[in-house]
Image (cartoon, rainbow, N blue to C red; front, side):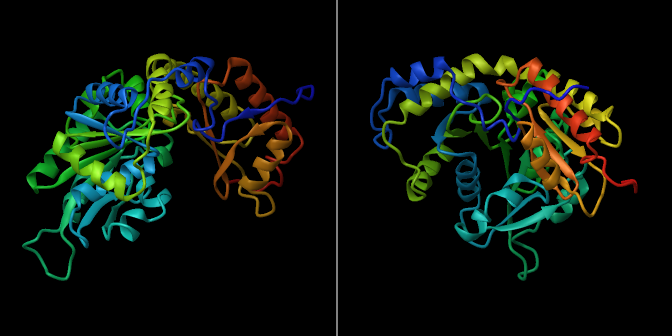
Length: 364
């Protein structure tokens, strides 16, 4: 195969998308006011639309998914020293800087995430700790799920499973929060409306700067009482902004124009996964590619790991990130074309021929 002409294909995340022309136009022309005073009309419109999509009473724009999750956990765990049950491979536990503990005094109690992103129902129930229990333990107040489950490869949690977790939460007087950073990906993949997926949840954090490609922001949804409390916490955390309609205008365009494109992202991810799996000694669990995230396992060579492979691919213009020592993460988004997918495959094949990805012999 000939050496591909170098171009840049950014697959580090679906957060790397650039605002479209329609987003830029909407931002430039957005009707705005002071949102801290509750008067920004574009923010109000976005919040109403997302609340309706999620089937909840109210919604609130926040600068990031991390803040959205933090606020949600702190509203539900309103006493310092209370406890949340969440996956040991969840975004809140791994990637949010321990904010629920350092800022909220909330204790994380982890349960193992299975390969499909779920946590075993019996293990969840066994983790619940009651105010009537041993005084040595914190009191459980909340269960958190993540959908799609990013560290499990963008897997979609089945609706039946979420409903069972919701029933478990109610049985023990707990609340259920869903980190729905890629909930639209789950909705498209499952062919089920978002409101049905999150029906059992008391709150949901919905990221608009990931799958659907807005430049900034997330929206949290829940009851009106929940959102009233959340606004106080947002102000405390420095998330009370002014003319946020400029940002919300782009988010509205993302909702209206990009949700339907997610199916193409998923199809391209599957094509790319199948192609990568055909390259000698690369391993991709193609069956686990349900949405827009792919994990590629490379040979366990002590002299050449995932970081080295990513640097080697970067020379060819393909930007990916290491997930672990011998695993690479790839994320598709709406600004990746069919020809980009072909180019990425050609670069992986070329790199393999140069023996950087298939160096030395011992198997995985």
